Image (cartoon, rainbow, N blue to C red; front, side):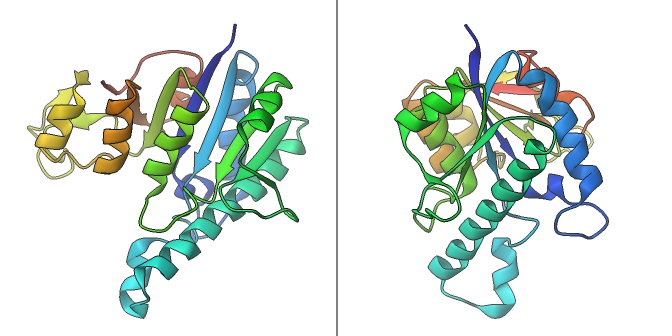
Length: 231
């Protein structure tokens, strides 16, 4: 029986050379996913940071809720574009949004998601949680729990969880495994607290790894343990 894996991928991984979405970046991700999708059921939450991030709102000073709505739409654009790109290579996909968008994609529905997985489709979950004030980390944790994922993986630009920022402290210690309680108590900024709390309450381990290194996403989706396991 195939393992079901939910992976959170930064929207910036679709973007290079200053473009919002870039073909070489999408090809690199496609190559990581193609083989792994033959042995695992893959669900993906793409961030929207290549289009809109919270810090983009600092100058505009919009109401936080409106800013989050823009971010949700950014994740929808990424899911639709990457899904369509994969379909060009006959990789079957399905896109599910937290908000109703019948002209563009399916609204999130567990029965339809299960059917899509059974059909061998890579499933994209977009639109965040459907509500403002929650990050895509929280949306990823929520979807992983709802679809009964065997694993929740988060691709970042750092190769795991450290006791301090390795970009600022050369003596930072990397954890192979670490508890949710320690991550929260030490305020290790690798995911938001709400996401960790959801995973902790539902006994869902999180694998945090460097997704920018070629081959790593494929390794994780095939079941290899790299980076840090938070449990």
